[in-house]
Image (cartoon, rainbow, N blue to C red; front, side):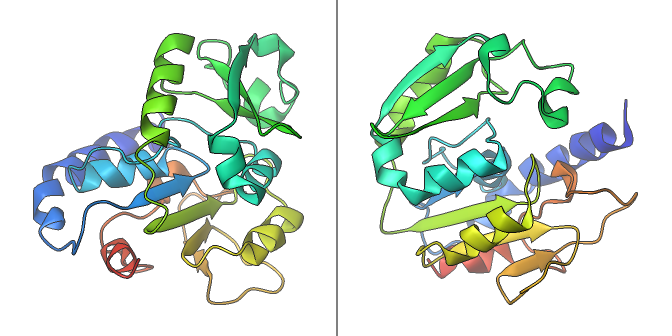
Amino acid sequence: MTYEGLRLKVLKFWRIGLANHRKKHLKSTDFTIISNNCWGGMIYESYNLPKESPTVGMFFIAKDYIEFLSDLKGYVNGKLTFIKSEESRWKDMPQISGDKRFGSYPVGVLSNGKNSIEIFFLHYHSEQEAREKWERRVQRINWNKLLVKFNDQNGCTETEVNKFMETPFKNKVFFTCKHWPNENGGYTVIHQFPKHEFIMASYEPFGKSKYIDITKVLNNL
C-alpha cells in the first residue's frame, strides 16, 4: 500500500467515526457541494449525511470543470452519455493514462447543448449506476445553499485558477499545495509530506483543520 493509500484508509476511520459528533455542530444539513473530485462525497460522509450533489465519487479534468461551472445549471440539466475509455479526449494526459484504474470505470460526456465535457465516474461500477445516481442527485441540488470547491489536481494551471476565482459563486473554496500569482483570501494553501506538484486527496480538509474550518464554512452558506 502506498503512503497516500495508508493515509486515506486511516483518515476514513476518523472521518466516519466522528461523523455524528461533527453533525451536531451543523446549523443545517441541506447544503449542496459542487466539487471537481471526490471531496464532496467525503464531506457528506464526514457528517453522516445523504449526498445532496451529483458531483460525488468522480472527477473532472480541470479545464472541463471550469467549463462545467461556467454554465452549471445548463450542464446538470443537460444530456449525459457514455463513451469508451479509449475515446476520451483526455486519455493521453499523464493524470489519466498513468492511473492503472483508467478503463475500469465509466466515462461520461455531459452536454449543455453548446459544449460538452467529460466526467470520470471513478467510484462507479457501471454506466447504469452512474446515470441513475447522477440523475437522482441532480434533483437534490439546493441552489440556495451551494458550496463550490476546486483544487490544483488534474491538469490545473494558473488559467483555471484565475477563471475559478472569477466565477460568480458566493461560496467557493480552492485547495492547493503551492502558492499562485494573484493569491488572495480565497486560496487555502496546505502543506503536505512528501511534497508533490498538486494536493493529494488525503490532505484535503474536512471538519476543522489548522487550515480551514469546513463546518464553519458550511454554517455560513
